[in-house]
Amino acid sequence: MKLNVITALLLTSMVFVACSNDDDDTSAEYYNWQARNDAYFEQKFQEASEYIAAGREDWYQILSYSKNNADKHTNYIIVNVLEQGKESHKEVIDGTKNTTNGLRCPIVGDTCTITYRGNLIPSKSYSTIASPDDIEVGYQFDTKWYGSSLILSEALYSPLTPNAVVDGFSTALQYMHPGDRWRVYIPYDLGYGSSSKDKVQAYSTLIFDIYMKSFKTKQKSSEEKQ
Image 1 (cartoon, rainbow, N blue to C red):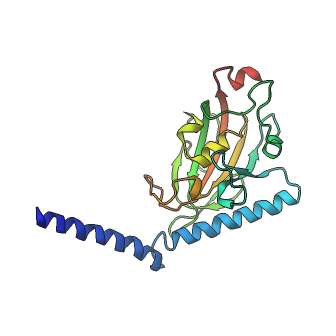
Image 2: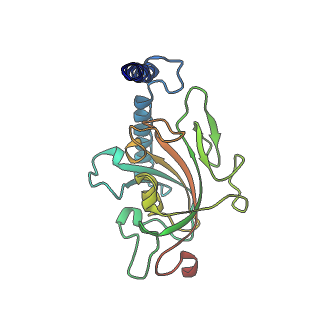
Image 3: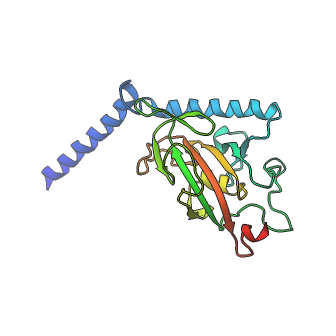
């Protein structure tokens, strides 16, 4: 029993040493990963700020539905609208995304029918160009379609509720309309934070390409309203 305890302690210490060495070893896949992700998201936030100040309507900074500190950049998701559905996104700015006439966007308990692809930021071995905006992304940890381009008729669709996903993804869904396709940048504070999750390294910025086909509420489906 004592030998087993000692062995377990030794293995635990080796794991901590290995994780620590990733920050110092420039050849490691996730070298200096937290700092690199901090810098990446801050740069993306500043780029979006410049686009918004210039009057572009295809970029947004959206405060997480679960946060109230508007001064902290990592309480926001960054959105690049790749394709827009029938409705505008004025509500991102004025805060009136749902009106007395009915739900224009999903709320937290609704069911959204979507397809998506998820990537990390570029790393040592993983770097590719993502369509249709030709940005550089890293490791692909999840996808609902095959090939480099999204073909709506061939993609797989998943029913997801905003309350069943990480805060950043949930926030995006609650501002999307049917027919929207968004590139969403989620800081790790609104993702998996300091924990690893399946194929996602701890402290990872999440980059999602999301297309919303429809959503259903307890009232009516978005398809019935169109």
